[in-house]
Amino acid sequence: MRAVGLALLITTFFIFSASAQAPYQKALGVKFPGGLSLTYKQFISDTHNLEAQFTAWNKGVRVAGLYEFNFYSFNDVPELSWFVGGGAHLGFWKSDYQKNYNSQIDVGVDGIIGLDYAFKKLPLNLSVDWEPAVTLVGNAGFTPVFGGIAVRYTF
Image 1 (spheres, rainbow, N blue to C red):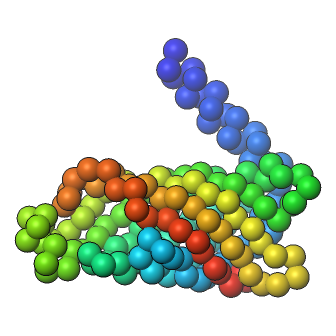
Image 2 (spheres, helix red, strand yellow):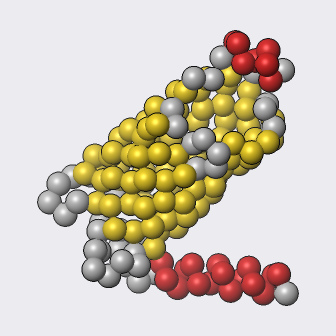
């Protein structure tokens, strides 16, 4: 029964995401306050994109790669979409935290959900998202602190 529900959910994602077109192809910018991130977004189809992030925060640095599904469900505002996806991260602790966590690295899986807006007449994209993570190596457990507000130049 679970497999049928999961298949129905995945099919629904693809049906609803297939009817719109991405308002931009690439975007580069910054995201905050979950640290300060350099973020790059690249659409690989009208409704799917890859996002790469390099984040510096108070405990170290981390890189994350995400695969995102975009849904253009707001008919009155075609520049607005919501997205959901997942990926993985690799982090490196500052020396103070290496002792606390008995590890030099932080490896885990990430989820992401958020809203994305692309301006019609400006090469600008704004998004807000939440990016919880489950760390498998390092300080193992749930980490809800990543995500934030992104401001990107689109091209």
